[in-house]
Length: 580
Image (tube, rainbow, N blue to C red):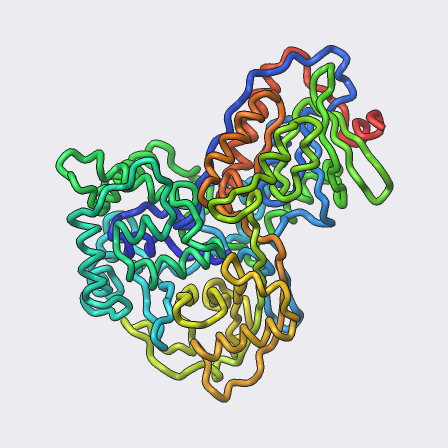
């Protein structure tokens, strides 16, 4: 959803968290365990090697990597396009906008796949010096950001620069002095230890380590922007595992008895620097910075569109899976509702990347525990299964002249130029919009020169009522939020470019999520060659999904290579025909 850079994490927690911890507060890729291989029979000639169910970013990048490794793969998707919630649009009058995610935090996996598909010349990256902003008390406050320097220079800029941590602490007025002092104590001196035998929410963790004010004015709006979630139910360990790990590292430093997390961040930064030097990017790749916001010239859908072109003949669109079954001879069969009727596919392996809310009945024939897992009653948070709240993405444009003619702090210039990534609205401010991405400032060519383009997100776990609003009411709420934060009182009505309500948007990594995933992993371990994945398990961010596609392809290939029968050379088309 909304992306904001890793320097926000560093600034708020006063630690040198690596850029590859971004999308700063989202879970990273978690490698799925490999079960023991099955012995495929010699009669498996009518099977394809791997069936991938779900053509979102996870499924499509997985299929791409399997295809490149020589695996005979078929990708089945219920919608009529690849990419899931990633949809990009362009108008004749010069606007480019997104219906879902707006950008990615650049990682090697994204640059790698762009090069493999021949779209690396389409990559675009944001100006690293422009900050994210927080709306508080009728004013926009910049969060600390470096000036684009590399290595140690960049770290110094982040601390000592004109928009660095020190200026945020001593001159900025987003936090009160008591709030700054409390955060400084937690970051540099120490804080209360984590409670024993209790899974902390994000709110509990931040309040314990940095204080209530940092939570309310910084972390709460940030979590709302990334997850559209409620930090009072989101699990710290599940939703923000890399930050939770920083605390563990801090306590591992012998003299740091009270776990001041600044020093844990420094130690982790040293580790990451060594890891990157040991595994540098290919010299053939375009130059990039870890974690810097990126996209493609024509939008994020450039990636799934390129995959669709490269996998021509190996993709089935508008194929909705209805059940997966295990074959006595080994392998699996999947049944689909398709435009031409019922179709079945036999495969040696199956990987599901479909959303969690669509799987309970589909997997029950092969995994009886699936319904109990995906529809589990979670009374402690009043949920059933994994919750996906509604979120609306509303893209509007206004003439630049309709924005407030004011100079922003720290020398960033006039608000009419929108010098930043975007703005977040703490729930305490009374603005219904979760956050606003300043799309025309992020990447070139997103709007005509005399317009500013804004992508607004509204809804989430704490505002499920958006699903009942009409389009006109949604636009009205968004326009109201823009006027309260960015526009002049006499600004004209918005130019509406896009409105998309996602009724089941982002899986919520809430209290109890990890134990739910443990149950799924245990059930999966009994079914060699079947993997149940997706962004509810491996991370919600765009780069998490791309990295998963790269890493899990190696898991599937290793499994297939360990099987005794030779790989079938049969085409996906013939496999479908033979399995009817």
